[in-house]
Image (cartoon, rainbow, N blue to C red; front, side, top):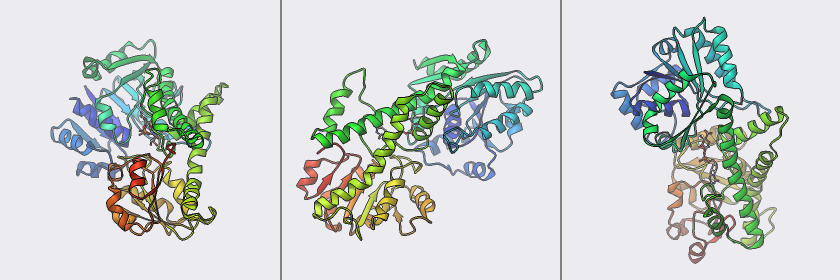
Length: 449
Ligand code: UGA
């Protein structure tokens, strides 16, 4: 069986490489010639740990191919995964134009029976729509449409592909063929006792949104609890442990931080609320989660200025004026260069508006470049580096936003001498408050008064 994957973005490339690693023959298709050429030449266009190794290994073994020729790729394949972008439109709806355009091309190019698998995150009923387009424009070709959402985390996508918690497959209820084909593809996982959920197209589409919305709810919940801990003198670490050991709650996704970000949670939670409103069945909890997360992020900048004012015993309105702030971590979380909806994109402009001189650190060059490119017009004074000491040197305040290992392992005793003032505000709770105080720091974190 030959598989093709259309779209070599994060999901498409990891999926294609992952299937080839499982032993399938895979053709990855993308219309972007530069991207395909650079992947063939050995350069992976996204930052994703260990992806380069599996791409290179499977390219060499002849199982993984790359092309811009969609028609040829389609003709050679039995199963076609579509993993193109479905970006957010201004009111939260998904832009399905790329998906529809690819569907038309697939319909036109198909010469015999094909299984079309939708990997892109799509609103409920999209797969039915894709099915209708294929039937209408497919010149009599038989198509089996499958919804197979992805649950890959950026930065851990290869691991997640190889070690899924579950696989979700939505098909038309009368489509036994599609089920059989997908069983063959995922057989190695099934043998490994990974649970495979067979369901309808609509349920499968909604599982994806519900999973992300539920996880986003956990994050927003723990951040609100951390703020409450600060207000009443309780401890969020102990609280999270105290509730997480209850099996019904579970201990993962209970780390307080500077709000959830990235390309998925913000987009998918908003899309879910729009879909629910359109269905005349509003999801009030998710609407509140979105509000809670954005107000949490917006308040963080003010917390930095208030804490500094307290440390220096000055007015909080001007506490950051002329001060150098070293911001550690620009990406929305560790192990990715993605800065979409990252806390840094909200907090840094705020700090600069307060008169601070801000320098950012991120261990990955592409994250620093993306940030400076995005903000070159609005905050031209901002500088970002991949060298930690250059950023820390002479800093009046250090602000931690991302849990990169390079940041988590900082030896603060050693760094004390290069800082102008010993103030660390840590919105990832990476360091031990007692130790920081012992080292002579004014240290603030979330929910650990
Ligand atoms: C998320 C989901 O976890 C994946 O399962 C899904 O496939 C993906 O979206 C997607 O839809 O494509 P991702 O956006 O890469 O993956 O990031 P996560 O690791 O889930 O983190 C999301 C946000 O929550 C980050 O800003 C992270 O810092 C924050 N977070 C997470 C916390 O603040 N605390 C936690 O305990 C966990």
